[in-house]
Image (cartoon, rainbow, N blue to C red):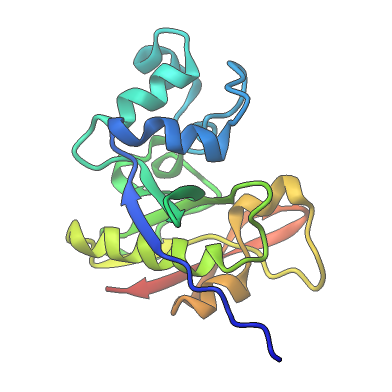
Length: 197
């Protein structure tokens, strides 16, 4: 007798202050002070110091209090299993100052900075739900388009750089390649992929 496919309940929500611990369970389950807290590619060091008073965790907590929280968390059956750092490009100092990932045009895009699937939940469909939730979040805030800057690996990529995502992952979520950047991850060029909303 064939096994019955299990049906999961998926939800994705912005990381507001009341969801901060769920975010931390995905990104930093041991709560290490020196962990990136998903800030390294979003804020300059001086911004982190100013916002968090020397604490990276506190800096991220402050971002969660803003009008546009810095990302979304995906839950499967009530358990936080995925994180996507996303926001208006204009609100991401490291990106607006980047000489390697320059704007393609004048469209006020929102950008996906990183995607993380919680350890123990990889290869279980989390990314699909996470990206759908990120798209819905950006659309609900009036974003005209959403961009990502993934790589296109031939095989498996270095897991330390997997946070940028892959071309295939974003194509499955309805993004298309519109250019390249001067940035690299795992010695591979990072693309510019866009989904119009």
